[in-house]
Image 1 (cartoon, rainbow, N blue to C red):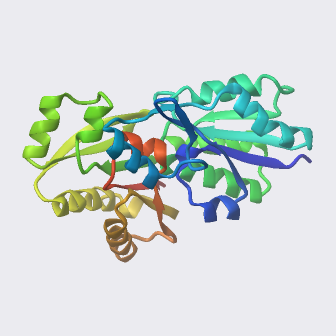
Image 2 (cartoon, rainbow, N blue to C red; image 1 turned 90 degrees about the horizontal axis):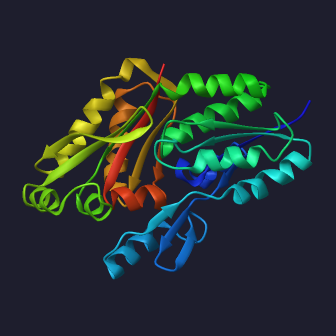
Length: 282
């Protein structure tokens, strides 16, 4: 029987420890500042990203891996006799999955299976871990694909963004909205709905109030959380992430509450001090 190799892309925001523990391979997206192109998580890290934004006053552009990038990543495994399952960033947000499908078509039918996560950040990561666990359990490619697709709609992803600045620079809100948001200390709430990133609420006031809402929104599902993993994902908000982790561990029955840092692609859209809670429903 062929071995199965799980692939994802850099927007999964999984830690190196988890990727190594579950033998997950990652194809990086690109972050482009003017003429300089970087590979997310490989040749640029979030700290450097924020430094460049401060220096230039501009956000980078982000780009999907090319079909050739995917083909180059998949080929050694297929040539070694392995089957590949790739789980990627929502097609509502990027052409990443479409490019992976183009690459998959270059191999014999069935050797590379491409799945749209309908998610971002550690919402993808949760599905990737489910797939990797299924590989360890001896599941087939078809069984893994069915499992991932069934769980995709059960993923809850919610972030609190600390400032409207990055949304404004990225063209997602007007200069007037950004000014008023700063003046009134408005912090947007972002959720993933039907594969897209949606602004669902705006919390006005102190950051503590926004964190409390984020926590309470998650804990409303405490009795219906998948117990394997819950992620607290952040961009330069380690203290708040540690606080949320502690509260969740005390108030929800989850085996592993894991803090992980958002990569450059997610950070470039949301900005520093973003923090989110990501989990799967039963």
